[in-house]
Length: 329
Image (tube, rainbow, N blue to C red; front, side):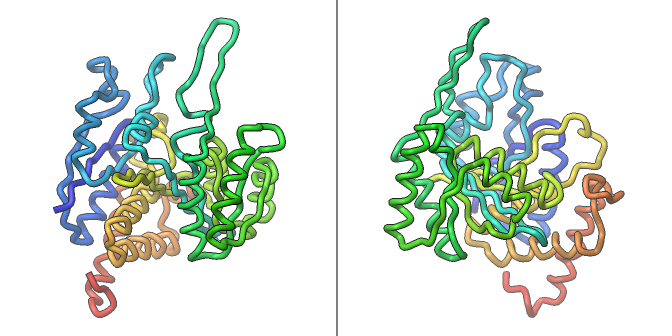
């Protein structure tokens, strides 16, 4: 049986993860869920947001389904999510963006760049070291080219005209794309940000460094319609972590109005990673059908609660399963 580490986290994390689990259960996916108490609430209670034992416990699972974490307000405390990404070497962050205006995938390097954790803080000056390596650039370019080989083209997004560390990233991406025969273009990150708003349809697969990918994917979520709609996969060679791209949103936590689509779609991405493509398709179709009927949470102008939206998605899944002849699970 598959074992999935379940990390509800803080804020709206438990609410949207509960929705994702309900939807997973409805597909009949046979899985053991191993829950971990990690995050800000844990830190307030016993001074640690995550422990070494938690990390080792997650490594004993096949992958992680993650809600959202509030980073403790301690300048010396490292992000829980960044620690997990680093220790499980989840170097590829895959963030699909789909709507009537855009159908693109951002492939973000996930363990280097400005999130490398090499910082010096002082009263008069603070420094962060931006780390770009050939190995890191090569393996994220390989992932992007693998995805692009099944789509249209690749855009390598960088700032090599100013940040000379990006010269290595750009050169490595060129080499990998040319070796695989992938059609590609190069674009400065500021131009990419502009074009995503003006002409989002021009993009297909986008590969970039850690911070740029983080920012561009949130911009893309705005183009799609809401942060609450977007899912992501953090992939390594051994483990994977699936999470909505939104944060913990403490301002709406407990109100029952959080959009669970990002978490539900993250669960679908997890199923696809497990090779359960038909179950993943079933979930995605149910979400799209629900949204197309105008059933939405307040972030999209609707009046549905988190639970009501989830009920509607489950109803769509049951409808498809009753049809039977078109669903091969």
